[in-house]
Image (cartoon, rainbow, N blue to C red; front, side, top):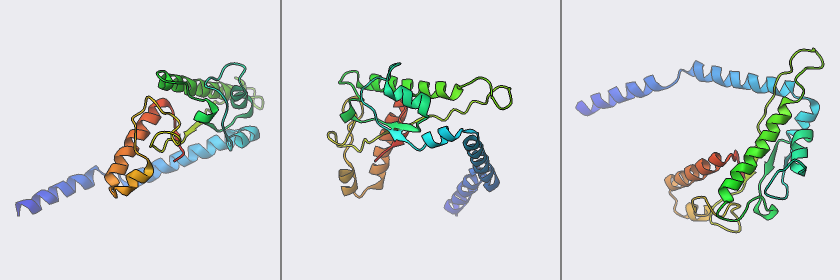
Length: 192
């Protein structure tokens, strides 16, 4: 009897802690409305640019780099970082340099979104439409040649090894580690 009562109390607390269905629906609708408005406010050039994920050579994005031009003038949607394009420096500075590179790319995107401070159609202040770049990477685990960043991150098993365990909790743990570390670097698109 005590066990049933305890289960009932736990169930009541669980149900009470869930968000109301209307709250979740309203938040989703507000997000969709914001996204549609953001898309509407983009110029045709910016909309087309959002369709492109590009790669580039080198581990820096200086003032005269081609990737800077693509971000500022062609409004690309994102970049894919690849070891074969020398986007990562050798150890021990791999992680710091990758973080700095990603921050520089996002800074260019922010500068691009600032554009003109005056809206030419109204003469008033222009709205700022900052859409962060997608920063993509393939980092499936197992080291070279599949992984792009070979030092500075937690070494993880490859997908075949994880699948061979038939243990979804291990897959979840590996995903949590990879997602957390890549997110802290500024990577927001995992190409697995």
